[in-house]
Image (cartoon, rainbow, N blue to C red; front, side):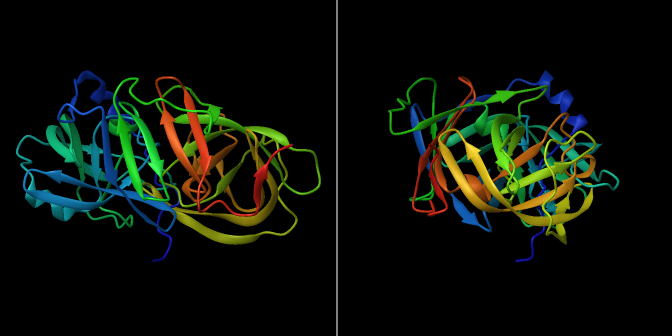
Length: 314
């Protein structure tokens, strides 16, 4: 499949109104719910159930920072009651106009055995061809400790403090700025210079290893050898940039060598204030992961995707 969206994260002012709603969750009394995931093109997908309708290929996106579900495939509109829906515009990465959508303020849907109640659902007015049927983010990451086992292709949702994390996991501090998007600090070495620490956010929906953002105050230099590329498509249009090899990325105790990096205009690709870079799923899935928003921690453990280019940092 052609790369359609390495920049699919939502930055939607319309979702500010969602803060007024109360959302509830049920998991049949279980503290631990394991759900299969589908991993394709360095992205992670789940299947949801709305009433009698099964909708596969829902992309997991840490950049979707509010409760709810967004459906890109407009054909599902005919399966839902939209009589009370209101029209909104939904902005995202890209430089074009924000597309139109319908918002239903309260639906119930299930992911595996987890029932999510009173959830807003956004349905695009036209099929925008993002390579998935939709996205979900904070409804999962914001309410559960979320573990990904890429050896088994499962996502496990833990309620409260049920999950006990042992010493086999590496703990990375994670922080948030003016929204619910997770950030970490990591260092990059472009060529032969000393590594420089960057503030970068996690875009779980991105198929990149790392995107370095070009802006007037950037802390790194562009590699001498790059090529012009089409990076992907966001909700607000196409994104172009450059690609090149960077010497090293250091996350906690790990070094990752000779990474494929994308370079993009921060104003088009990111729209997150003071971001230096973006970490994507192509890099993250080298590890099994636990996102713990409540304690502001990201836990890493190497898995079968862990390559020789990655080794403990001395």
